[in-house]
Image (cartoon, rainbow, N blue to C red):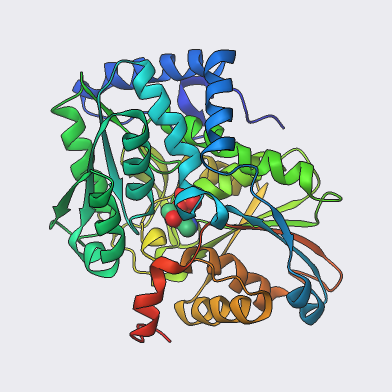
Length: 384
Ligand SMILES: *Cc1c(COP(=O)(O)O)cnc(C)c1O
């Protein structure tokens, strides 16, 4: 099964598409054309690859989790996106889109952020490439992630607090899309995950596929299971892209309070048809997770498709399991991962030795980010 080509009309089976106001249709169409041309252009790809190497620190290592593997009776490998510049996989997507924005003659980046990781990555790329950055962030997330707000401002970005709705990522995304509509000729909307209207799900997965491509080269043999956490689904989509044509089982792990794949139903959110948490009237529901980066009621349409055809499976874990998993990985391997990434670890801890993950299995787990941003909240006992 080949997923790398541009999906026709941006469709992943019955999912995806481009559900946007009339005023954004030309911008989305122009962006799809520009990305297709750039992605096929060796000069663009060489410049991106070079930045990923000399600036973002790629390839990131693949680390055997030796102690945890022995304890659990499996072989666990960690793909270390926590070691990428700015502390998560977000930089892979952001560098690609920022280069594209510059190539398109745009001078301003607009982005949404939840945990603040995508905002920090966007502010970073803007500083590097001489672009301005406006970052929309819910006030609830601003309270939870003050340090990342300070980092964005340190990098020269403008952070716009969003007070509507649940004051989290969903609302920040609405506001960022509104800001794009009103500055569509000058600004690039730098979406942080694999949701949104075409071309975003395809473009962001293509830019994140470096995770899976590297991991496939680094892992000694095709793993039995490939696992990653799923918020919007970009680190998982990038990881899965490297293994979708292999025999590996693909598992995405959602927050129990933000489980669009597990508890949602088909609907439209932020410009794409996908799986969405919604009420009986089709109103998008509010998600709730200890991890700001997974606090999102939707998921990228490619996941909805992979789930529907049975190629990928989705599981949920609770906030308590996540905190315990973060602590256990820290104590057994000396790696403090992000609360988001700890979702994938929590599933492995629960499933190891059961029919879902039998003893002796080999597992490749994408550790999407580092946990520094979460230490203040954990030290204050948010769920410890
Ligand atoms: C943003 C973020 C996520 C969730 O985003 P995806 O698009 O699902 O990858 C996961 N982990 C970390 C560390 C993040 O910063």
